[in-house]
Each structure stands twice: as C-alpha cells, then as structure tokens.
View (spheres, rainbow, N blue to C red):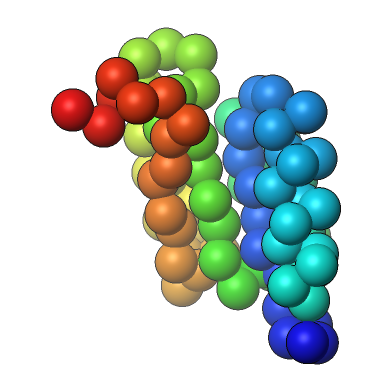
Length: 94
C-alpha cells in the first residue's frame, strides 16, 4: 500500500512513537513526530499531516494535550487537520 499521507504523532515517549511509526509505515503512511507540546504546532505546520494523534496522557493530567489541541485549532494553517486524542493508559479510558 502507498497512501503517501502523513500521520503526526505527539507523545513524550520516543520508544512508543517509534513503535507506532513502524506499524504505520508498514501500512504505507509517512509519520511525523513531535515529543513535546512546544514542537507540536511547528511540526504540524512543516509536515501538514492528514491526521494528528495526540497522547492525552502527556504530563499535566491532560492539560498539555488540551493546550496542544487549542493551539492547533487556533492556527489557520493547521486548524483543518483532524486531531484524535489517544492514550495507552487503561486508567484514563474509564
């Protein structure tokens, strides 16, 4: 498969990002990564991904993830990009 679309991962855990990037790459996606809230908007502007996955479990009890979402949605260059909040922590899903 060659979708040639980019999915952006925002997570502070580089190991988890590498695992997800590998799996998404096997499905034909390009993957961009940001490991901090500060990098997220710049990477989104530079890469213009088709989808952004943000770890809801970033440090700060979700406040950092919400700040990333707000920053992205306020920027007209990237506001159109869909954002999914994700979590690898089962406790956050309840």
